[in-house]
Image (cartoon, helix red, strand yellow):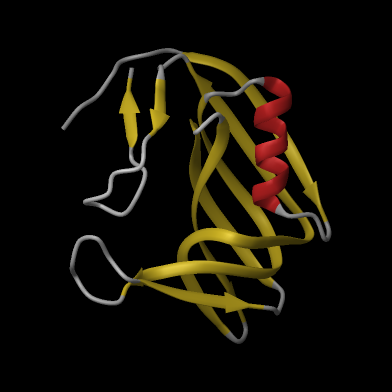
Length: 144
């Protein structure tokens, strides 16, 4: 384990409107406000999304399993913002459910808001960035 101690910085409340892409909007906000280290929680609804719902097998690096939905689902999620290769990288996990079922995973590609998604972002003063690790096949945070 590796860790750092820090303090809370600015706090943001954001509303993402119907049809907007949650990941793209969070990235744009991180760029505009220079948010380099933060965590967030979110709630609302998504109308369409593509997410990773787990590895195909328990091996490293994993072969990812993709899932998607294109019906309106309620969403609860949590994630963080750190930068990778000079741009913000949003790491968002959540559960999306409705009358037709539920799915849970890592939202990576499309994450389109349905009606509204509310996000509460807490900035941290922890110096870290995402660095791709070939052995893991992922970009964990690395402290500076």
